[in-house]
Length: 148
Length: 284
Image: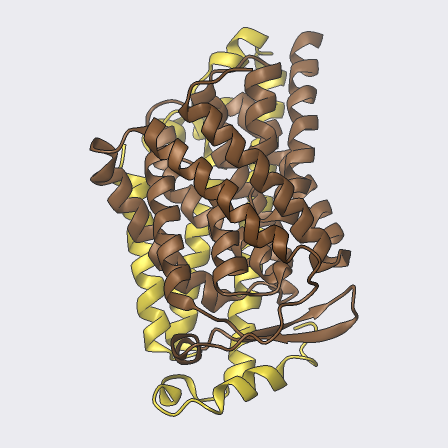
C-alpha cells in the first residue's frame, strides 16, 4: 500500500471533536479510509483497462475479418441485447466483442460503488455510509436498467 | 483496407485525446471537447455525439479517478454523500420532471446559472487555498474534512468542508439536469464543492471527476437503449480519452490550484454560453 506515511493526522484530528456521531466510525479510521481508496482505485483501473483491451481486440478482429466501410462505422449501432452479444462473442464476432467491452466500461463505475458498499460495511463498519452507498447503487442501477 | 476509414478513426482519436486531458484536469469529463468536434467537424448528429460523450465521461472518470483516488486527492466520503443527491435528482428528473420541463427552458436556466456562478469563481481566481473555512455541523458529523498531499507545494494540505446543505441542493439540481438533458453536469458538481463547500480546487475537480462516472453510467441506459451508442465511434473515443485522462492527471497534480481554477473558469464560461445558445436555438 503506497504513500501511507502522511495519512493519519488530519483524519484523527477531525474525528476527535465528534461526540454524537463519533461512535459510528471510531475504530482505526485512517487505515480503513485508505483501504476503500485503494480498492476503488484498483476496481476502476481493472475495469477500464479490461474494457479498452477487449474493445481493441474486437476492433482488430473486425478489421481482419470484414473490414468495415466508413458508412458502416458511422451507422453501426451497439446491440442492447446481452444474449445476442454473448452468442456473438462465442462465435468470435468482432463487433460483439466491441459491444462486450463497452458494457464492461459502463459497469465499471457501478462496480466501484458496489465495492464501496462492501468496504463501508465490512472494513469501516460505518453503517451510515453503507446505507448512503447502497442507495446510490440501487438508484444508479435502476436508472441504467429502467429509464429509457 | 480503406484509408478513409483509418483517417476517420484517427480524427476521432485526436479530438478525444485533448478531451481526456481537459476533462481530467477540470473534473468535467471531456464531452466539452468531444461533442463539438463530432458534431461541427465530423457532421455527426448531436444525440449520437452525446452518446459518445457519455461513454467518454465514464472512461475519463474511471481512468483519471483511479489515479486521483490512489493519490488520495479524491474525497470518497464527499463523493458518495453528494452522489446521493445527484442520483435522486436524476431519477426525479428523468422519470417525472422531463414531462413538464422543456429541454430549452432548462438549458436557458442552466446557462444563466453557470454565467452567474462565474462571478464567485472569478472573485477568488487568485486564491491558492481557501482560508478560514469552518466545517459546518453536518460536515463534521459526516466526516467530510480531509487532507491531500499537494505535489506542487510539496506538503500535506488539510481542509475543512463548509456549507453542506447548499452543496446538496446544487447536486440535486445537477442530478435533475443530468436526468433530463442526459449530460453529466460535472460543472455543477465542481461548483457545489468549490463555491458552496469551499474545498481546495484540486479536491473539488478530482472528487467531481470521481462522481461523474456514476452519473454517466446511470444515464448510459437511455443512450444504449435508443441505439445512440456507435461502437466504431466509441472505441477510438474511449481508448484515446483514457490516454488523455492519464496525461491530464499528471499535469493537474503538478499544477497550482489557481491554474486548475482558471481552466475550470474558461470551460464554465464556454458551457454557459453553449447552453444559452442551445436554449435559444442560436447557431453559429
